Length: 140
Image (cartoon, rainbow, N blue to C red; front, side, top):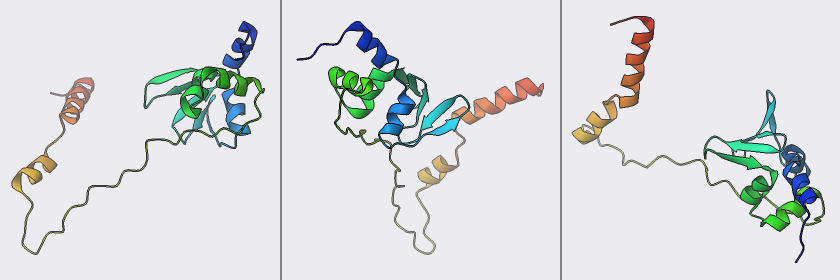
């Protein structure tokens, strides 16, 4: 069992996530001062990261633990460069979803009236948006 000093843990927390990902063959897209790791839709800025989708973020050790599935000791070892193993990220669970298949309609056949009415109904959030917009513009 290996233990790490506070300096080693602090160095791992401050490790540059962009460099770590690039050393593992991942591609990042620069967006202003930050980088986007499109595989998991994670924003990276130095040693910190944030996922707007999951509303979670943290430092470099948290990143490696979450996206590479490594325990704390292995994450510190990877970030400090002591490991020679080749770790791979966990696949993203947000894949392209296929739309539900609908049975084709026969000539003259209509969908159920409830389905048609529900499809044409304006979402509640959209109505609120229109009310707020008219308030800002000074309308009725």
